[in-house]
Length: 233
Image (cartoon, rainbow, N blue to C red; front, side, top):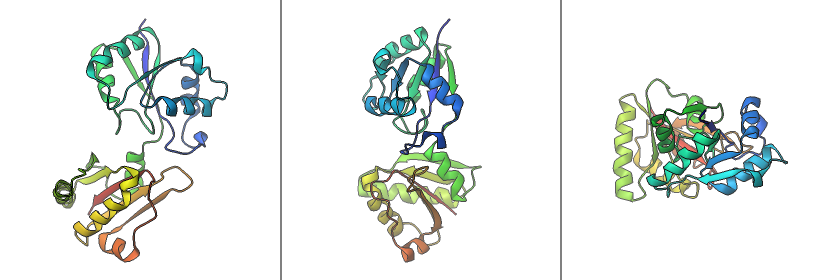
């Protein structure tokens, strides 16, 4: 019988894994000895955090990240066919804002069983806490780095938000403040902006206000903190 691909959620930065991970997730994770991971050090640290005696040296790890080529997926599928295997992102849920989707698609093409497990996703936690409608939204990943392209993208997303589709995006943590400044300078004063940073950690910050109110209040302290940004009306 072929193995299953388990989509293993991990914490978003907090060491208190009991806060966000159900017992069933921990039980399944501790039973596995085959893993496909976005970052090897993060994965090993997570496993040791949830079980200090986890047999790291007896487990198999394959790396799937943005540099992985499609031809390398074959070996990963073979690994899944031979053993129940866990797919782990660097943070949050596999397949959402991470490089796991091609492997999951390949598993479906091989008629392998894919099992999603419950856990934290910064994208959906931010949306649920934003006050915006979850009926119609789009996740846009990272915005362009180039100033001109970014400006055009922001105008496009704001137009979609004004038409009723909530727009979600993210940024590399060390560029958070630069992005906030662009948002406050380029979005309309009445456009609503949610900033959600450090979700599920001890420094969690989630707030939704109009751009005008953000300008009056000032930029929040979110430098180098993982953050999600949402605009709506």
